[in-house]
Amino acid sequence: MGFRVKLVASALALALAAVSVGGARAQSISQALTIAYDHAPDLQAALLSAKAAAENVALAQAGMRPQIGASLGGTYSWSAGQASLGNPSGAFSDSQTYTAGLSYNQTIFDNYKTDAQVEAARAGAEAAEYQIRNTEQNVLLAVVQAYMSVLSDRQLVALRQENISFFQAQLQSARDRLDVGEGTRIDVAQAEARLAQGDATYRAAVSSLEISQATFQRYVGAAPQNLDASHNYARLIPSSLQAALSQAETGHPAILMSKAAIRAAQAGTDSAQAAFGPSASVSGSIGTAYSNPGGAQGISGKLGFTITIPLYAGGAIGASVRKANIEQIKSEVDAMSSYDQIREAVISAWAGIQSADAQISAANAAVSAGRTVLDGVIQERDLGTRTTLDVLNAQAELTTAREGLINASTNKVIATFSLLSAMGHLTATDLGLAVEVKSAVRYNQVVEDVWQELRTVAE
Image (cartoon, rainbow, N blue to C red; front, side, top):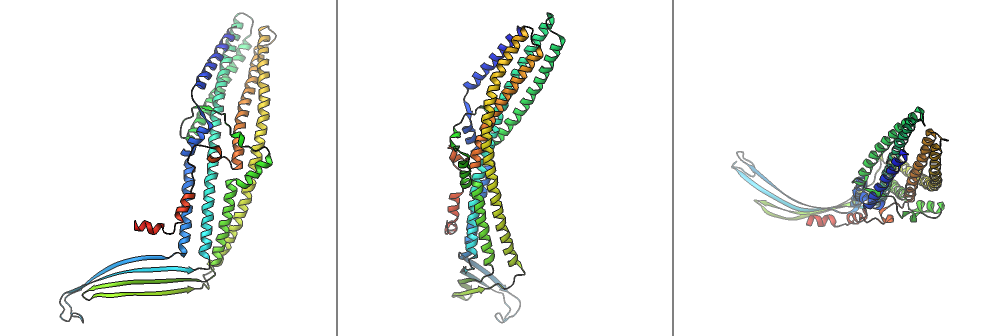
């Protein structure tokens, strides 16, 4: 009966370890997501890209705004050793001239090309903002996957460690039975083989856990602590697949980004077509000069206007229009592809939840039955009606069922968050994370300030 004593001791040790872990403060999924949100380099890069896209709006608006400049200059000239009209004696002479002035240039009409460019830039900035939200979802889903990978790998390591303890107890029991003439060498060899196999699977689980922890740390920026997979985000899941699809089609950032890209492409076509039309600009300058000798020369200025009508540009205008039309068509095709991908992701995640629920029910039943079978086979082996191999096989079936339960539970959590992501709701705002939401909206408002640059110069 020595193997039973060892098995009880092993189970007790595992129970004590579980109590010890449970007594420490758990790191919830929400906490991991919150930390990762502030840490994620991909999310920070998306924010910077959105700010850069916002600057395109200011650059486009500059096309119809006045260009005002100030200038100040001076020259010094001298001559010596050669007679000239101004210096008949050839003696040394010098003079200084100083000028100051203001200039003004502005395009007052360009066949609405600038308007189209501004619209394209605004659509691009909007798409970049949606890209932040899309990146946010990808990052948070990757964190959940890494989180659950660590948690399930830890459970598998504990399970396979328990397996080793069980096989060690069975091996010792087989040897004891052999010593008293109740067993065979075959029983011992089979127990040794299962122990070696169990040790190999344990080492594989440990290696997998190390990789999962490294992945977790890459996304979260800190090593995983005592993880707890419980969450209340399932409340965000709608009651039907059709409702989930409806929310995804109207609110997923990838779809909204595609729509913004279509607007940008349409504006690009308008801009290219505007190049065929006339443009008009005005210019002016005012300035003064002072020379020594000679004194002040007064104030002078000039005004002018230019009207330009393109006639032929070597085919560049026509090519730009054709290219813009192609890009507009491509943006519409990309939008259809995004729509199909999102729809597929919603259906796949929904099916994943349903499948995981069924697998969890089946695995729970299998684990319960497996425990009963194992206890019965051990008792029958002790009575001599079963062999050690029967016990080992029963343990293997129970272990498979328990691993299936771990995997099904993990898949349920991942499928839940995958559905939230497919619907467009895996965001810091929807999850209620205690973070400052990354957005370039305020930055967009700042760059459209007409007088910002002038105030900056004045300061």
